[in-house]
Amino acid sequence: MSSDLFPDHSAEEAAREKTIVRTSMIGIGANVALSAFKAVVGLLSHSIAITLDSVNNLSDAGSSLITIIGTKLAKKQPDRKHPWGHGRAEYLSSMIISVIILYAGITSFVESVKKIVSPRTPDYSAAAIIIVSAAIIVKILLGTYVKKTGKRVNSDSLVNSGTDALMDSIISASTLAAAIIFLIWHISLEAWLGAVISLIIIKSGLDMLTGTISHLLGQRIGADTARKVRECITSFPEVRGVFDLIFHDYGPDRINCSAHIEVSDKLTARDIDQLQRMITIDLYLRHNIILTALSVYTYSETDTHEIEMRSDIYSIAMSVENVLEAHGFYLDEAAKVIQFDIIVSFDAPDRLAVYKKVTEKITAKYPKYELVCTLDTDFSLSEQED
Image (cartoon, rainbow, N blue to C red; front, side, top):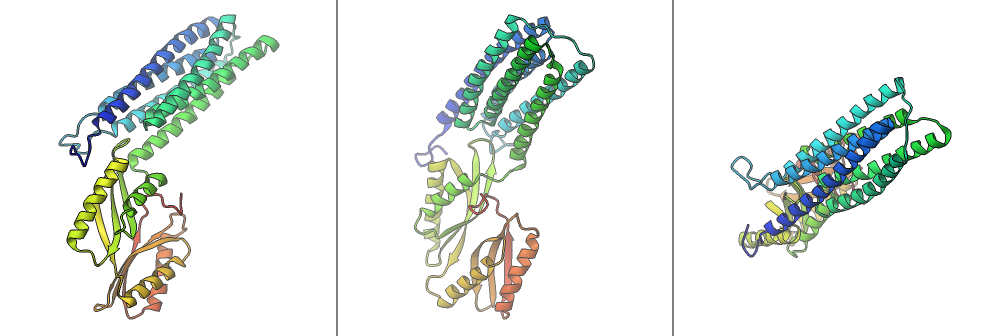
């Protein structure tokens, strides 16, 4: 898409890539420096918490490197095997970062348990206190910057790295508190604190991993995106309703979608063709979303019998608990066939039971008609379930 109607977004993508790489490089530099200082101080003071914290900083630097690699891979042009590009490589890099964090947490927990079984008295120095204090400040600043940048450029990897850095600041603050307690009351909490730190790291890794896997499996698109698409399509006066939105996520800012629209049966095939083209262009210009398919439902504006029957059937369907929507009504009076779709909430204990109740009530009201009712899946988060 490189015409005037479909502008080239390569400049925006290049700027996004540059921002991610620059932010990741800053993270690498900060974490390597912190890791080196903490490792030296931890070994000299025999502090397991500070030593483990240095390992965590090193893994953070590795995470930033993986973010850069994932971003570069995602930027590769589409090829024969991957016609929609390589955008999901960013999700893979985010998953690898999550696994690294999880592995670091498990390793740290094992070492902490060993220290609990065979305790060793720590030896804090003024340098250790100063470095840990400085690390807290650095991590807060770094984490806030990386996370904010990640949200701005829609990068899960950066958001994960930023969140991890902010968590590190809390961990470092706990290490500092343990050091102060030891210096004042001579009570060593090092090993126990190391175990707590490890559990926090493990939980963080699991949460990030779950979120990334959800992206790769094909999670439902956010309600805000679905709402924007509906608003864009219904801004055309010919469109009375938008239904059956289906999204395909091929990486950050690489979304395709298909939809059904309801239009008057007075429109000609040429009218619908022009409408589809205009909607496709507008959606891409506004939200950088590619409309891959647009199907049509029609409604009558003049057939009183059909209008009254559609309204009645929709009312019956919507009166059943957990029915979110009824749409796509079609009446073939000659063949005595009624067709329409319903969407049943995923919160319903038994969606098929809800569907059966709807069809039974409508069949009882219109026994002379053959009923063809489709149980639709709400692929995008609806307003009712947001």
